[in-house]
Length: 108
Image (cartoon, rainbow, N blue to C red):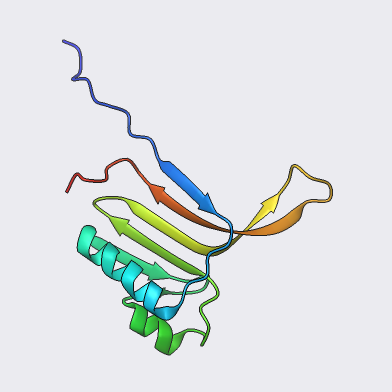
């Protein structure tokens, strides 16, 4: 007997160069994740936080890097992340923002 056919889920990714976000924008983004995902994790480059308010209190006054992950469905937003372009000489650093969807969006 053959195993049941199952569709392959692919990660969908969109990269954005320049995004200016204010605290109110982050509040709305985090609220959207909480309304859609079963669990939400907020972090910066150094720590993980239970809430955006805790990040504001214990983190830096200006949010320089922001990472929010939602599970069930799997959604991930990276803000002000740094990458290295290896294809150029010399390699250089660049800043990017990225939204990822693991393909299970809408399956709660």
